Length: 217
Image 1 (spheres, rainbow, N blue to C red):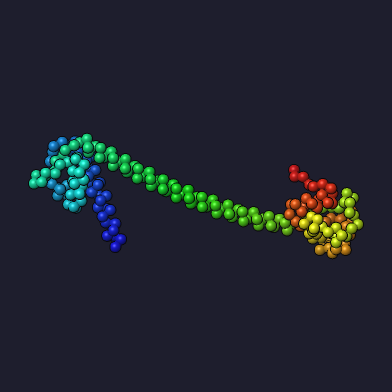
Image 2 (cartoon, rainbow, N blue to C red; image 1 turned 180 degrees about the vertical axis):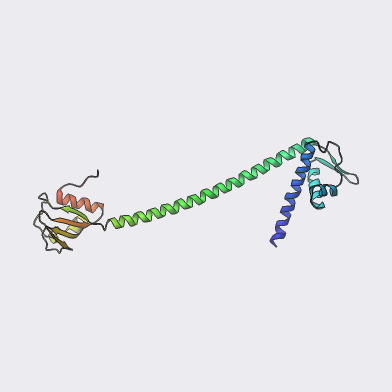
């Protein structure tokens, strides 16, 4: 079924090609103006095609007034100029078709590259979110100094979560590491406080404990 559908396209391409070859011979002077180009059967034999293909090629040349078919006599060369114009138009059409194909292929490649870029952007955004989420779980630390104006208060009294959105994970006091300190633990000078939170929580903690926020660089 598919072979039957494709077959006419191959025949049409072939007879057009034969017509071009005959036209080229006319332009080259191999078939002079007014000369008889024998029979369609001879053309078919010379170019290795079927008589039907040769007939269509001759009819195309006749429609373009390149040759003249005189029934009972034969095929005669009528116009070298029109043969040359036919070849030029065919070459231009071939170039146009090739350019269109290259353009379609270029567009297809660009679409594929765009899709790949969008996928990479999506992957990058996903990985960035994962990285950001993981960074919020890496504890920050700060050393409590006399600059902290609320020395002696307990973790519960400081109410850090509501004030800074930070969560204290541990407090190191001397050689002792106090994990998950309860609300009754007091904060003293020299304590190292380990906490988690986002960048804003870090700034709020630094502001609360030192009176200033850390500066990059």
